[in-house]
Image (cartoon, rainbow, N blue to C red; front, side, top):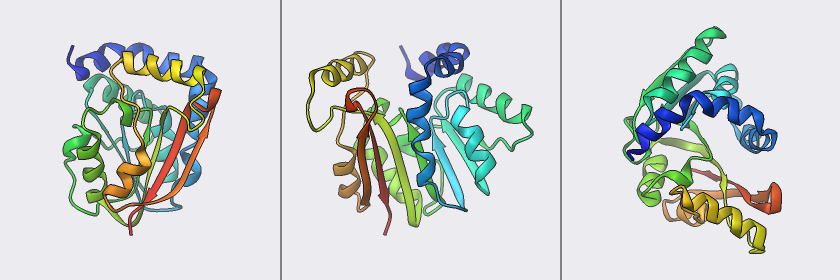
Length: 198
């Protein structure tokens, strides 16, 4: 099935599921402390807009990009109900429709592993970041200690088409400096990786 169509079908239940699993919300919120105090923020894959709502309250300019029209509709409804600006774009992470050096931060929570061509996407992220801008990724991982429960969880992610990657290596390959990398959550199966553009 086309990924955009799959996420369109998931849109009505994605938000309630996200709220029903407190650790998932907590893991996603780990990205927030790394955001700059001001500037333009792009969230790729805002889904139903639960993180995007917080970003829109904090940043001078917030943009959301998603492949799913259904998810963007949910995000738009959420933001409009709260009187927040809804700057939403339908598109793919591998071919970002933004000019070079457009954003001070890019945030992705549980999205990067679902992108088919991680190297191409990472180059696109580096292109649209401004000098000093940060890329913040929170995603599932196989932790450094290679523990069995985490490997089982990672295998479950891959059954849905996700790819377990070394985000830090991909960041460095595009010229970003890795300023943070930490495993946390159940069995250390979640990783936050933060890169900065020189």
